[in-house]
Image (cartoon, rainbow, N blue to C red; front, side, top):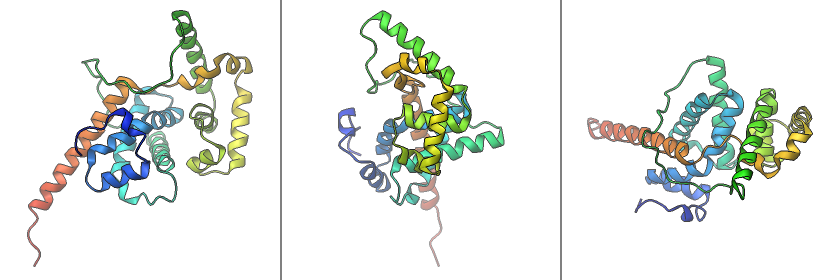
Amino acid sequence: MQGALKPGEWDALSDEEVVQRVRAGEVDVFEVLMRRYNQRVYRLARAVLRSDSEAEDVTQEAWVRAYAHLDQFAGRAAFSTWLSRIALYEAWARVRRGNRFETIEPDPRGEGREMKQASVGPDPEGEVFGREVRSLVEAAVEALPESYRTVFMLRQIEELSTAETAECLEVSEETVKTRLHRARSALRQELLTKAGAGIREAFPFLGDRCDRMVESVLARIMRSESAHHQRVRHRPPAG
């Protein structure tokens, strides 16, 4: 890859183009996909696990597995759908096993590139109110049953369509509609009304946290690539 891509250049690449470039050997371009979908993967894992640290663990593992099996992405579904399924399978497997993956240590430098995100309130009072609403939303969503949380996360927070959500979860569209209706009914209508546009700020995974995830996954991938090349170099000739 000839230099790192700038944030403004990300939108010019489709998911499929990025996948093709990574498969062709431009491993660094994998960062584009991570920065594009890091928050969605984290939110899905968080919806299943209800734990920030476990959701970060699963997010990292889901990305590493996605890279390792990138040759299996056939394009029959959107890359985001394929990736979402990997994240959900990893989260559900974590629930079944009840163990932990490698954790990501906090970045002591407190540094990181900023990613694009929705604008905050117009004044300090608005920011405080937005944070309070976000906390209320997160608490209310977290109290939902897992099957409702995942649908609510995809439909209401990530704003996927009913069809996209059904494809991600591998359920019928009617099931998605029913679960979303029940999730909304379980939440106080007053809370949803007050949250307004701020609801999309719930469960953020941007800035430093996104940067740490990108760095950790790329480091693991690079170590794996290096080990693979070493094995190929020292492999005895055939015959």
